[in-house]
Length: 337
Ligand code: NAD
Ligand code: UD1
Image: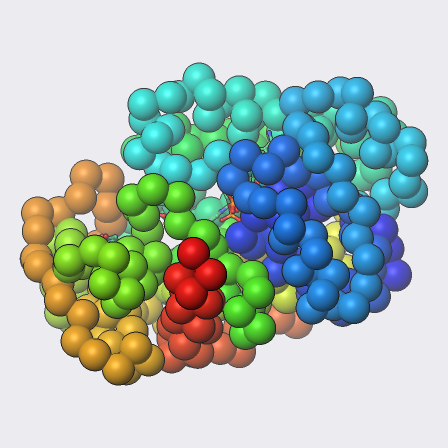
């Protein structure tokens, strides 16, 4: 049992991870500035897990609160989720993204160093691979220049943490490269609350299914994929959360840096996702084929063998379960609005 500081712990992936950490008997301390989440998520995490959580409302850019947290708690490791994550917005506000996602992260790593905490699990992304030359994509595929500042902040963090591990042999770093996290907690109490017009596919499809938007805009059907639409490795957020518990256990017992893909190893097209959603919501979902979206790749899905051999983890849930849980959460959210 360890005590874990979870930055961004009230967010989409962080909240699910807190639930899995608690159920694996770890203690959880959350730091979140609530920029993209709500404090009542803490109660929901406690409701699902039947355990209590220590919550600090604050910013990773703020040394005072970081020092306070590391002084008031015996932190064994950090899982660092806190970041801004809207790709389009990052192109309009690059400085804010570098400040928060790189400056804030370095600030956190410095605080860890000051307080002798040397174990960190970092939220990276399959975006670091760009369009890989071959799929399934393994961790040794080359890192490619990102098409937007958000993606660049992930590459920079990977580099910074790798340099840290090269310099300080007692540090342990997991770079978890998430593929496309979707779904929600089966209780319907946790999920992703879309903010404005969703950029990502599943929240958009859900809003069309609920009648809040007219049709799904399918960004291109002329890719070199089975139905011409983009193919991605969608992963249930609960599976992803469980992967963090395994990664943490590994990091607590080893030194050095490891990059690990978290995906299912299966690729689904945009039309596959729309059709899976139609099955759970029980009606047709209108869509229109549009021009390709700038910066999009044709396909990517994970080679998941390293996660299995190194962490003993593999994803359990299929696309039907992901969309069923996503739909359950979205319907509940809609009823309560
Ligand atoms: P999210 O926005 O739901 O959660 C991030 C949380 O961090 C939010 O609660 C936000 O309030 C908080 N936060 C942001 N800046 C902060 C700061 N300076 N100080 C304190 N708290 C701060 O996002 P998510 O989908 O849960 O993503 C979590 C992490 O995973 C992010 O680093 C994201 O880049 C990464 N990631 C997400 C995806 C995805 O598809 N959701 C894919 C790959 C990687
Ligand atoms: C996007 C980001 C990526 C980020 C990830 C997680 C871009 C170019 N990439 O990845 O950097 O790490 O989200 O937040 O923004 N699609 C539609 N219609 C829509 C939305 C999406 O057809 O309204 C298609 C896309 O073209 C793609 C697939 O659905 O083929 C998945 O898109 P999305 O959910 O945005 O994820 P990524 O593009 O993989």
